[in-house]
Image (cartoon, rainbow, N blue to C red):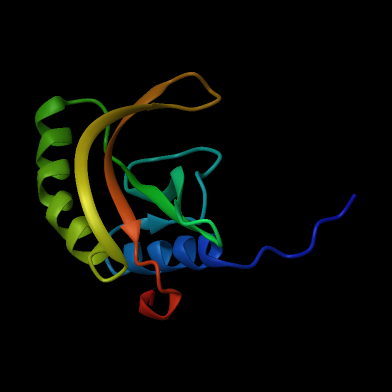
Length: 132
């Protein structure tokens, strides 16, 4: 079974987030999580979609997490890199939507090893014309 190429606000939002992350110097940006993430890899991850509206229609409000993998190992280096990247990433994402929160996380991928990362929650603008 083949599905048609995806279209719509979710695709536009992901693309806009990727484009915004690409403006931050030093990041290796992907549309989805890379197979073997390393420090400074960045990608959007869909978090939740809320449907709002009345009886006649619903509007999908997508929320994404912009993830930036930090260097693992010596904690002071990890903290310093996270501190220096946080405002740069959040500022870049402001052009795409409302930046709601950021927090440090530990990501676990298929290989089973955890890596430190920044997670920045963003709600892209509803009007796709406002998305870059």
